[in-house]
Amino acid sequence: MKKFAALTAALLMGLASASFAEPPKGEGPGPGRHPPRDCSKAPDAEKKARCEEHQAAMKAAMEKCKGKEGDARKSCMQENMPKRKKDG
Image 1 (cartoon, one colour):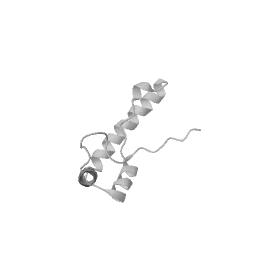
Image 2: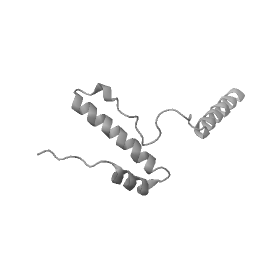
Image 3: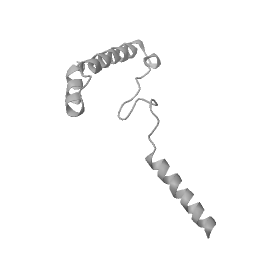
């Protein structure tokens, strides 16, 4: 019975330490964020140029909206991104 109690206690301590542990920092882009696309994999020059233009605009918008959070950041990002060009 003592072995069972010791095993149960060890198991509970392990679960408790795992549930209260902080996730590792510095891995990945963070919650809700994605790494930038690799523009070199674009199928043609036009799409590569559009990809690079979008990344430059995104970087500029992120700098302008730095320090804002939530809905204020979302609206700031939408205002500072270039509008889509309509074909035809």
